[in-house]
Length: 366
Ligand SMILES: Cc1ncc(COP(=O)(O)O)c(C=O)c1O
Image (cartoon, rainbow, N blue to C red; front, side, top):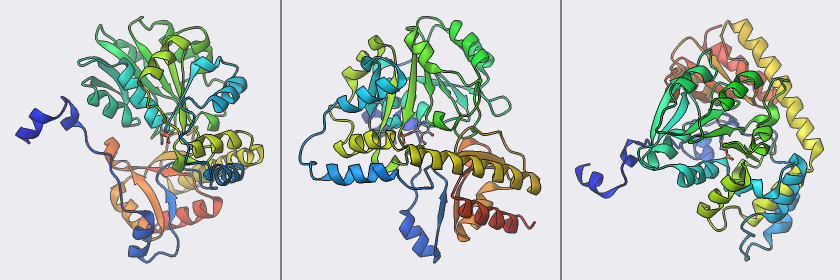
């Protein structure tokens, strides 16, 4: 350990490596399961967009060529859809990779980064990697406490992450509170609005981050093709920011962050209206069903605006998760978020949701 401290960057040894389980197929074979419902990683249970699959096949014969680094075709299309300038968008190898780019572009050693707790763990990892210091502010009622976060802003604050909707709780901050927060931000701070799940939000008071970006504020929004479009395995996401900020991010991105196949799939998926409608309909049906089921089981949960829910199982969630796994349902216990009785449940197909609820009731002895 001592010798490692001399070798590696400050802060790196304070990072816990990302927990990776066994390959799903091996896990399933080991447990002798006929099927395993993947309800732990907020993926799309309906598969990839079929139009994306066609595009992947067509593009596959061109992979001897490097991709076009900035994703010009996709940039044009997304810019036109969103009504923003092309220079405001930067594509990357998943929104995760955008978070790295943000770290490289903005963080100096000793900078402070305000993050909620619990939230998406990559914000803390990126901050520590750059030698910056995460300042954690607990959620209030499972939601970002923007007032308390504003109170923690000081001369060393550089970034603030607001995951909207929040992972793992699924909650949102609304227009009015976000507006007051943005108005009060000092010039030396950049606000990152992580909107990985924004397509699932159906709430009139959900803020439009693009308004702030068009106004030239120090706001960066993050989005992904991993959720609604079902191409998490291809890794493609993007950041939106005023041109000066995105130009800074362009300087530190990898030369070819997005594969040809991923760009082609994203271009096709954007036009797959039928698939998008099916995904959103399944999501809404799942949400209603799980709300109803958790109510019947007497389990409290946070109101969600995403494709997952954070539910209090009122007992050791790791044990419940293990028992559910043995019955063919993979869910994420809240232990890493220091919520040991909670679990994050990704919505499945309705068949998976029904099977999951029956299995959960059995495990809980109800
Ligand atoms: C809040 C949040 N941000 C970013 C990501 C990363 O998305 P991507 O798959 O585009 O890297 C996720 C993935 O689950 C997420 O939950």
